[in-house]
Image 1: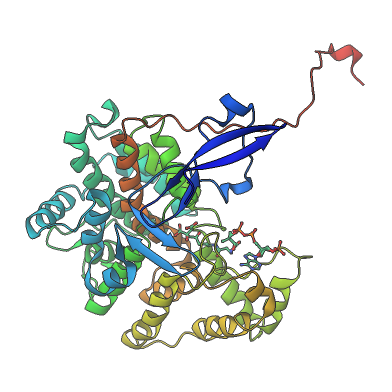
Image 2 (image 1 turned 135 degrees about the vertical axis):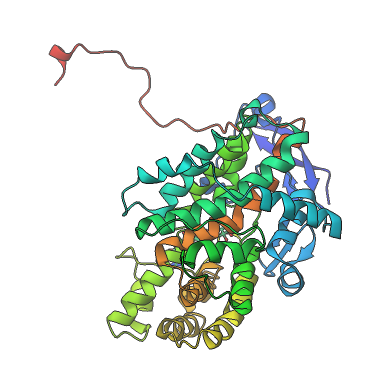
Length: 429
Ligand code: SDX
């Protein structure tokens, strides 16, 4: 591979260094471009722009490969847990038994919210979207964390990371209970991460939720599969905020807001709403597919397509395999799963999708599992956010640990009016 790329502009040649990643990915380093050539690059949606070098997650979109710190997602799905995978992402290697126990202890010790947080919950109307509550309450909870606003301190990072990862689960469950007018259910220190979340969501003061091992495992897997995904929209947002040296909780609150959009994490909610409307209209999917291909309306086959994957999203394959298992355990048959499978079957034979390399992504089947567990649709993206927290924490740490990180401040090409002057209001037309 050449060591430099040559850019010719106005008859002048500029040599730009070429960087090659550990998986052979090639990047042209344009750090000197504006200084030497007086030009910047323009890249709508950053589709061709690397914002950073990162050692956390690797995706090969053409081959449908996803690895966390080099370990294939399929092996982690088969052998690991969400908390163990969180340690892998955040600290760069699989934890020893002792390290895992220490991190689990920190999660347990920090699972409660400050009692005064309940006044914040009281302030939300029952109809408040849980993603709005989540982003505000992550920031609100940071006000109760002494020392958090001092800025990044490696000695205090472990505690802050555990606090965020643990409390985000409690905030989500409390938000759900509040929306139904139900009393908050406090975490149990004897329960592991995902079991405790289900307990806080679905137990009652007079009766504990029946924690079926297969249901706990299915939710833990959903969290694990969502844990990180390179520089997606919300993770890039977290890094953007971290680059100004803001605190971890502020970065996570920003990540929640970016994730909420229907083109990103909000897609899991949009998929189920799409499947429900197809079901209501008695469509077997054929009519909807035709609409999704027709540019004259703004319908898209939600849960399909991806900026990076031009092949089947490996996470979708794993989740799809889980659907049948969880429906059997819950003794449910879900017509939406049949519709989803029919949509996939039609789309993967249709040239519109084939030519654009549109395949099911992580959001296409995840809602089926969450529905089967009894998680309401407006909590689906909250589940995604809880799963993505370790990835955001790992990226925050990577930005903070990198001494040379500069504040993220992209340039632009200005297309507005050239020099003009103020006109007093009496002279305006
Ligand atoms: C996530 O980045 C990540 O890693 C994200 C994520 C993560 O883990 O963080 O993987 C999680 O966000 C998954 C994606 C969830 N979103 C959806 O499922 C929403 C539906 N999909 C899309 O809107 C779309 O595919 C995106 C947003 C995912 C990707 O958008 P791009 O890369 O900007 O592609 P595009 O919109 O430019 O589409 C290219 C073409 C267009 O057609 P043409 O202009 O070439 O004719 O494909 C078409 C689009 O109209 N297209 C679709 C489609 N997705 C793309 N047409 C119908 N249905 C779709 N779902």
